[in-house]
Image (cartoon, rainbow, N blue to C red; front, top):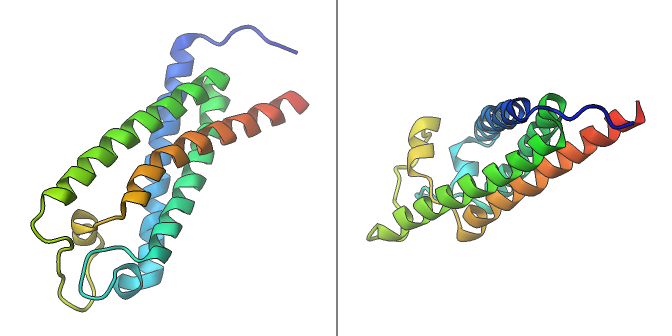
Length: 160
């Protein structure tokens, strides 16, 4: 049942392929949510602060992307790749969250004001302000999702 051990290089390749997939898939899914909801459904009136609905959708998109990334990592590099991916997602997520949080806290006003009407996705992503709950839960969503996707793929591979 256990095959020969997978080389470390292949596990590293699986980790990076999974991470790249998660980034691309997350950007695509969040952009689709943004297009579907429109700027009025995404932001609180006259600000760049995300609505609760949009933050929940972004977390769900992050979970889907992490599961797909964990799946791909296991397909390429075995379960070790999924564990490495989970650690990478947690570390980069916490670092990015800390930077994002300190950037938000350094602003004078709590929320930037925006003009009413439509806002393009690039401008919105540069100025968006997320809640602390979202910023610091996303790394754990990535960690758990990538491990779940990896475990799911490994279980299916064992059944074959």
